[in-house]
Image 1 (tube, rainbow, N blue to C red):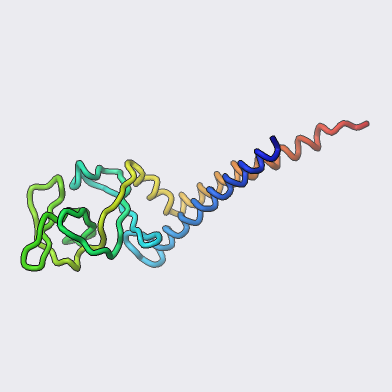
Image 2: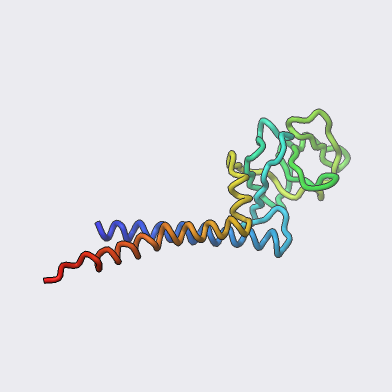
Length: 169
């Protein structure tokens, strides 16, 4: 039983360390390097904040974006809009430009292929809030503290109990 507990503690420590490293990497990428969206191994993480791409992507979804990949008609893309990055879909081409239209919109626009930042891939429903929290300083602190409490504190308490209840004969 003791070996199983040590194995479980080792696995939890590994998961905790991985989450912490990913969170720090995303935090540094966004705040220090100024990369938007923050990237991890060539994949951008984009939080859906509006309903423009419904039903494909809903508000609160976390979309993985393949940055720098060549886009084609039919692809959902992250594109540099008039003011900021936004999600849209390529519905065709015209004179070397892409015709873009969000799934939930009526109007389409023409944009140069260079305005496409990346192609939208798989998404994680409802995880945008968790990703935003994880890449914040407060989120990193919370992950660190929870990990310390869940992984290291039970071992310390168990060690003190053994010393306290040791027979004296």
